[in-house]
Length: 560
Image 1 (cartoon, rainbow, N blue to C red):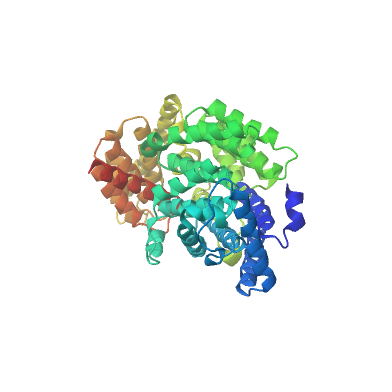
Image 2 (image 1 turned 45 degrees about the horizontal axis):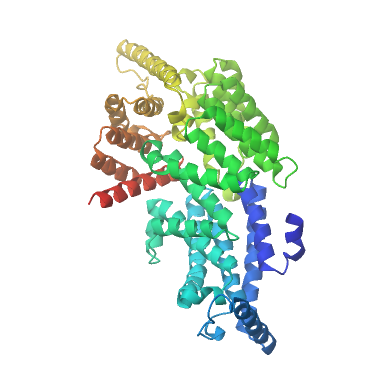
């Protein structure tokens, strides 16, 4: 397929888009800077080709007018036996080729917007909005022409262009509905209002039409469903899980060897807490992707998901091996994989090896253009710097693996037995801090006007309290979270390093209220969390808050 597309990619927008989409899919799977830049370059080139085609039609010639008219004549002639000829002249609408070029141009902007969205930074979110606006403008133009055509649309526009239009407009609305509140405010300034239901309607129509973009529409909806469920499993799992599973099963029946659908099967199996099936799906995806164009990308993506599954099932040594493999492959962030490898060794009590691995992290961090670090690199570097302040002597006060799993919402898929073990580990950390504080206070009592500083374990306590609250909520014990979460919120001015703990504490407080069936309180608490900024994984939590708050608003509308 790649070779066929390459033959005409330098002059045909449709072939160029197909090739660019392959690069786009590879980029979102690898998380690699090189693949990201290659996809951007391909999409910008395709955009320029489509723009040139539109520009050429703006300068009509007799030859082009003849071909446009002849195309519509042939279409009408073919459809004569089935439908009555259109009463409207073909010159009333732009030629089919122009409309298709506008849609291709729009989809390039849409894919560029998604690539920027995945980088999860303020600058990239703003870029995302700019490209979404560009996509929306092009789609709107074609959409208006499509609506003018009414029942005659098949006479003037081919089915695949309509498929692309449904996919594009539906995707834009779906993406907009999931963006953080602060980004949405910028979008409202353009006069837009995302309509999630319209997005789903158009994407489902695209799937039913079985046009050129039906598979991409399925991938878009599965991505949204998996993002929503994994972001807020307690709240959104019942809403989306059955729909997502049905869609995936239907898709797999028609495309039994699709590695993309098989990859999603692994994700959905995890969200359904079927970890053996999830791991099996990822392994099978790796097998099927051999000798394919994206073999390395898919293989590494699956290896990462398998490592996560090992963590969820408490197989820390297997998880460590998987992270080491990814480190050797230079997939994604080497600093992150070394950090996670050390975190896994810490969980099995091999602290000496964990310290060696943690100590490597600062040398592996890679600065991007402008000296900026990725969110994950900035996080692991800051954590290791905290460990190094005590010469790694205070590692008892941290649980790096559980902290990562709490931030990325992986703890809900652990068994209750493993959660109880995790709770014991957290309580040991809290007890170790308490013992250290008592010793330091005793030393201060023995010296008048001492210059020894007051005990300062606010960051360590905040992290342990938030993780503990997460575990207690999953175990169905929300009434036990109030004291710990209130402590984090009350001491937020003292928490200078792990500033993420305060908004995440508010998130967990909202979850506790949700379980206790005080949904209005959940809404109030989550709206407070929206106001926080400049903390680790801010945009990940922001999307989680948007999805949860939107769900409450939809639920309230249904009730009223």
